[in-house]
Image 1 (spheres, one colour):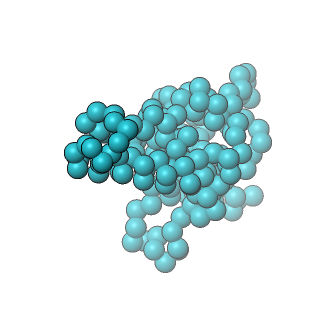
Image 2 (tube, rainbow, N blue to C red):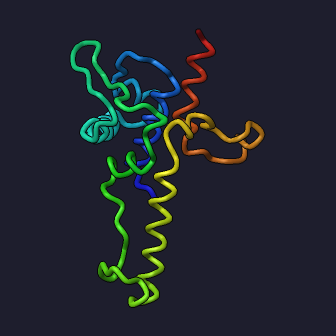
Length: 158
């Protein structure tokens, strides 16, 4: 449903929230932490900077920081920054859904549901529970696990 780029964007932003640093973090360091390609990570960071979600800092100690508070940033904004506007797959736009075919109505409903869910969830919501219950960890493959894993390891060492 979401592209790999959107999933990486969510992981990157969640990682930044969880490490809780106010100073810039380099995309290369983020890529290492979440086991991603530094090149791909830079591409995704660029998309998030262009959307105003991340702020870019140049120089030797440069990198990226969050430009938006996690509770203000919806999943819809992240997804649209990474993969473009979420569009409905309709036959043709038409105002009166009672007059169109059933497929068009179903796709319109699906589009509205997707927009509704992505608009309701924020980055802060994900950060509040970034992993499943510990009893489930050996049994489920969580897409956010990489964003969380090395944060916990680094915090334990301090």
